[in-house]
Length: 404
Ligand code: SF4
Ligand code: SF4
Image (cartoon, rainbow, N blue to C red; front, side, top):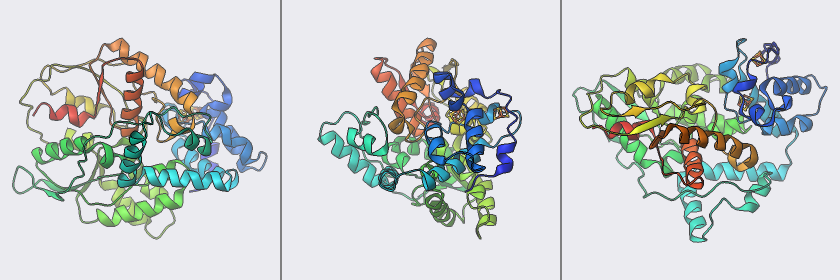
């Protein structure tokens, strides 16, 4: 994944993206804005600046893509930031720090190792991720609380028949890594709703989609994940994803594998990828049978709203629930600061974004916040806990399943 100079030249420096950028809103500094970062990338690509000098500003970017949505000039910021991260890794990261990062990502993206690490952390009565890990990764402090370990609910049955016969289509659900380790209940709700809507569901054990690798500057590792997933889902009609970050990456496999011999296969694969709310919103799901008298507010995960352009579908599905009230929060489309492992690496900027999100949630008086990305869910739940607010954070499918 390399930086394309033509993509950099699309920026006309209008500044319309600035107020959509959480790091600019927090710092007010041009170098922490999309326009400033694009300018710095261009300087480095043209050899007028060392990548080492650009690195702090690339590291401070949340990769939230709020700027991509706001940009009238069609700057493909997702490609730019992933390309810039790969350059930083190649030129500016110390080998030991790079090795520690790779180990950390390798452990996060393995559901068995992730559960083991969390169990160990809790047995040692750790409340946050270890300070030494944060330091090795290049962060000044550790701000991420260790989440509670939910009961183990790895999906064991590999085929779930549709309620109707014959099934409408055969879909494969991405089990994933963090989703599988910590959000088995979301997978259960997703499978239930898909089978109710007439789909036969299979859950291939194919591992990580490569999102964390791609977003942190390791495109080769991401490509290896993509190849494995494409093989595992080859025979299915749709690939269904209930984690925004994973879905966004899987829709971009054609870009990730551009120039590789699998490019055509990647294009066909990406065409089959659907976020769960995208597929259910255009399916005939029976009407809910139970009232859900709750006031809820929507947090639009960046990789759903900006990465995939999906905003209305989760709302349309939830509006079908009898007695559910949806109250929109201010800045629903603004990043909460979780951003993969960003909250571990950039705790101060991540906390400032979280603070804004928690204040916006509080103003709505909602009992439930809806979030379609596991990182956002954990981070917002941490913020609510620290603010002493008793608000539940649920995936849209968990909330929707309460109506059946
Ligand atoms: S991706 Fe997000 S944090 Fe990065 S420049 Fe764009 S808006 Fe700002
Ligand atoms: S909105 Fe687009 S063109 Fe304008 S400064 Fe931002 S990235 Fe550049």
